[in-house]
Image (cartoon, rainbow, N blue to C red; front, side, top):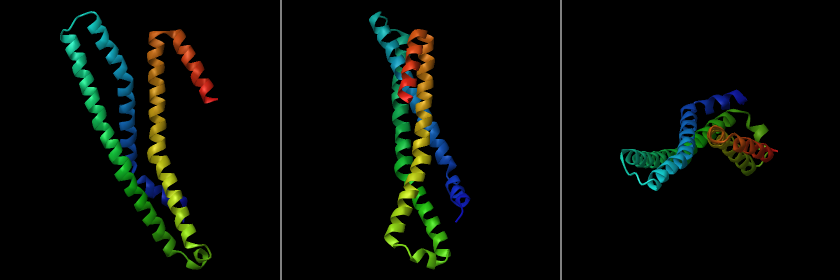
Length: 170
């Protein structure tokens, strides 16, 4: 069995991967914008001006909250339903490929061991592609967004933040 066969089988689900990345990036951006929006709301309250601007910010905060809940629902649906389906279809595909091969070369191994290895390997591969990679992209977007905000607010804080990120990465 060639690796390209497995990759092409996983590639059939690239729409789910792209959706997962988009949803994670949107959640990251909402998570960055929400504290800034809350700060504007608090400033508006402190200055005692409850006007159209305050109502606009409040409405925007509610929209962000509802959007984050809705996207989190779809992320959970992908993680718990679609990814399980992908694992099952990949497992079925590999088993069909194995059964078409010469059984003598496979029969010298313990069936439970092979089954366990196959399940573990498929879980690892699918979780990496469909969960870890979108999570890394989300973390990168969050880091970049925070860097941009800190740079626009205060350059010294931005430099300190970059210093802390570099130390953390080491």
